[in-house]
Length: 104
Image 1 (tube, helix red, strand yellow):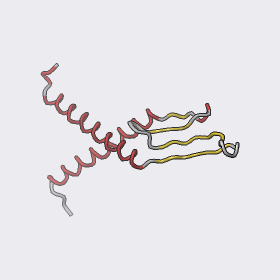
Image 2: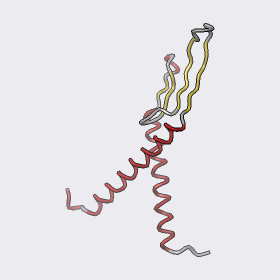
Image 3: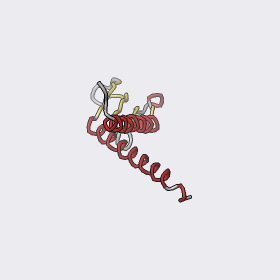
Image 4: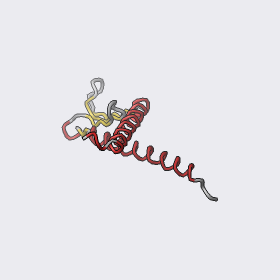
C-alpha cells in the first residue's frame, strides 16, 4: 500500500504534535514533581494543576498512621490541554522565527 505524499505529510505533523505534547507534559511533570515523603509531607505532581497526591499521616479518629492516594483525571486532562497549548505556541513561534530571520 502506497501512502500519498499529502497524507504522509499530515501524518508526520500529527506525530510531531503528539510527541511534542508528550515531551512538554513529561518535562512539566518532572519539574513540578515534589517528593515530600522523606519530610512527612505529601508527594505531588502536576502543572498547572496537581493531578496526583500521595501522603502519610496520623488519623485523628484512630491515632494510627494512614496512607492516602488521590488521583484526579480532570486535572490530568487540563494538564494535557495546557501541554498541547504550550507546545503549539512554541512550535508556531519557532516557525515564525525561522521564516523571519531578519527580525534579529
